[in-house]
Length: 349
Image (cartoon, rainbow, N blue to C red; front, side):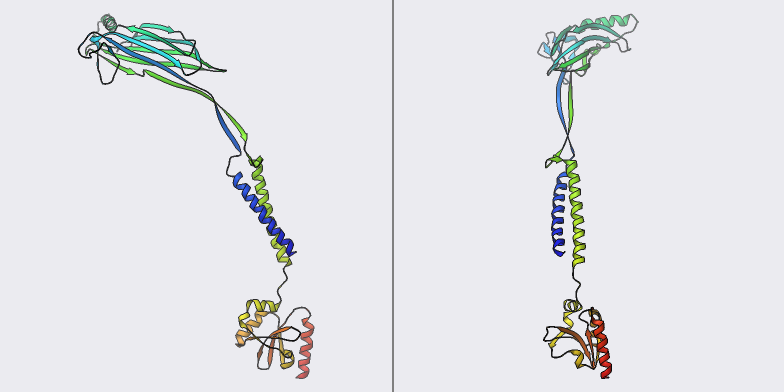
């Protein structure tokens, strides 16, 4: 039974080790693998490029001027405003309606549509060009202001692009709503043009697909590996408990003399044996437990004597005057011996 308990203990250690090893791999990863795949990614650029064609002058030393935050634009020097609009896609094609509008907005809130034109698009890109005379526009707004008997020396030139298109790429398509505005504040009294708004507009359209698959470990799913690790560890713990129970059950109980030798050897003195102690002493008292013999040794301040005989049997006893306190070697069959010994002692007395 002890051998079986040993084998079971070894098997339990193996099961627990394998279970913990699998658990480390199974519980440190997700049971499912989620992956993303980009189906398409399209970049759309919408640009309103402004170029001022100037009258001959000595201020800029050029007849072409690009807008800049550090350089003012004087209205009297502008001959024409060239508006170049471009629409482009990184891939795919667009179809639908795009139009560019030019509005003259009065500070009171009303606006006059000055120009409007569609932009034909049926491919990846489209463009158009407008040439606007700022001086004519300024005169037009002054004339309109006089109709309401109001003197007005400023207005806003608004360039607006709007669109509703369908972007197609391979078998995919999506709707694109476009809205972009650039304002030019025309300050007639200050003879300046101020620009505000987003001249470049970029948008990114993309679509991804998500797929989920079962994660695997050692040829099995992570969920199955988790269950297996729990089962192996639980089985190993159960085997450990069973092996402990078997070992405790199969373990031979220690004899009184063995307990005395193993735990209280420092209190024992070994002497040469000749004849049995019970024949040498008038009174003999048998002690059942080695602990009681040691307790008696401390009370009487006497050592425990160990005496071995020819038949290789040993006795453990304490001598106090004419009394010998002897440890019973075995609990079985000692009651009869004790009674006969007591009877013989009474006869001797």
